Image (cartoon, rainbow, N blue to C red):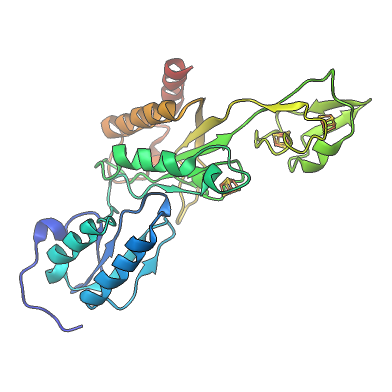
Length: 290
Ligand code: SF4
Ligand code: SF4
Ligand code: SF4
């Protein structure tokens, strides 16, 4: 692509979704695409925008968005306007809340316990791009299979569901033991015994019971904090389980405020959890939402 001579909009150039390329005369433009959802019209629009601006390829990122490589910074203003009009606006990548990711959840996946896509869209609306001392990634998996690796994010949300059995009606047929991947269920003397410490609350044993005696408790949302991918992967710590999407929004709001007030720039959130007195924060959150 030929170099252009127009000036560069510096305010735009320093925004989070613009990443300086290996060749510093060019940049990568990352998009905001909550839950990785995109309509066919937006997809077509992206192709047209790329062609119009001489962008040869688009890249799918690990965090469910797309980026446009090798962009001449002098066309940024026009490009960003086009992206906004297409409903695929500029993303974020600095010390801020970046693209919220999610699996397809109970809209399409047979294992989905919660509407993770709807929740990701709500979280995006309220928190996307909020500037913080550290980068915060939020990811949601609609069941403990964890396809979204949500616990490897600063904030992870997992859909869970407890199975509830009526022991008086259990025939001891053992079908549910076959479906439990955690080997949490045993049949002893014709009665089911669940080792709760092994149970991940995936709910996978509920439907297969041929006698329909296992009920699913209402879905819940397990929230973890302080996970991280990259050079030093870490699994987030369990913060709290809540019952409603509104509760999740409240808890995320508290976490974001806590990070905003107490975290500092220069190290990752997981490295700061001890200094930030995570256990005290956990107690506070539990007292608020229980
Ligand atoms: S995490 Fe669970 S609900 Fe989400 S895609 Fe994986 S199996 Fe399906
Ligand atoms: S909810 Fe999942 S882990 Fe727990 S007993 Fe049932 S199948 Fe096993
Ligand atoms: S499948 Fe149902 S009836 Fe059979 S052991 Fe499990 S809970 Fe009991």
